[in-house]
Length: 563
Image (cartoon, rainbow, N blue to C red; front, side, top):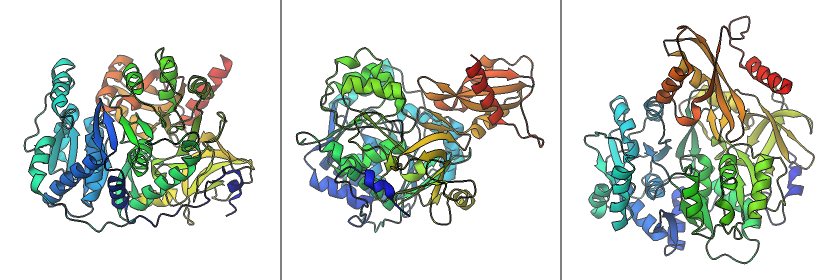
């Protein structure tokens, strides 16, 4: 394939990256622990952990996990926000020879049960704030070992006060009962005399099951191998270096980790790339508290700030953001959803640092394309294929289209997943015979190699960087006794990019939107819930009775034009 886009690369960025120096992610992390031992690795609510401490703590947790008798390749789930335990537990699971299953802690019991059963997870680390959700489904899963963490576990004496406030002042910990579970601090005590048994992990072993809706509504695990994530970390390093290295030398880079570590973007960029380069990662447990986030940002000389459009937008529209000193910002990477020009322009004006828009998916670990970090301003594209990556624009028959023509974006490179966990048919449907992953997004590539996304082939809705699949939302709503049939689409939203709009034909004439909203709140996590509900007497259908979501979408577009 002619990689003509290489001519557009910034000076010094290689065409290819070499993954061979690392046997596994464990090798990569252990190198960072040795190289940067005395440095601070993570900070959360003012409490620091050094690289040496992450090394020692993760060794203990890994040894404890091995003592439970699980075989190599067993799946271990993490259900926590960005707190100090998260990076420790990720490193521990990988060092013990197991597979990390990242879980959104805001999941409803229904969503959690599906993910735990689909992955076959045998153990889970859960923050006590979310333990009540786990309690509701535990007996219907294969989980044998539960570790319950608290916000203050790794904060020393300060942790007692933190836990007191979280539990009794803010009342953020609903009552729960998990008999036989192990408190995180007790685990550390039990593990004090345990020895970690080295495991021969290779690049081809699965490191993460990263759950995504893929091309349909059933949430499934993208199998990301050690090689996939190593490759994407090295690709990110090669690509972002011209931006990170500009200006005076920085002794230690400071990354903002405001996006949740269970999201692939934060996991790769902050969780692994940050450690690979010896950065200090600022962990933000609740990025929705914008005032609190700005207060944390004011304490550090930030260099790298990966985020989604909605977070950048919320920050630049907050009155306190203008008081921050942003002079040390070098690379701000926008991903997860489209960056809006209005937001990019405001961010540039406020910080002097352009948002580098990138593109990728859980299935690509995630970065596939990105704008060069040397750009002067937002350009509306998702950039160029990063090193060792090929992008093809395909027609419906799977053939490449001419430059400038629209087609499905397909990606080939060492960061592309091994496949979907236990779903060979689903895997076959998204992979071409020559190894390209079909993204479901429609794009156009220009003669320089820059790609713009013009539409989505699939019905997925993108809410603040999170995938929402109409099949799942409709399946949940259809179970409500007052609903005859339903359909949902994404509609534009100034803050979230898109939000869910639900169309419903009532079975019970007295059904109200408030009643349906309350039902959805029980069954769906926040970003999946409909923001708007419209009742109809009927929904548009094909001759065979399939509901036409596209007609509902087109109808909204026409109404907008008319307005």
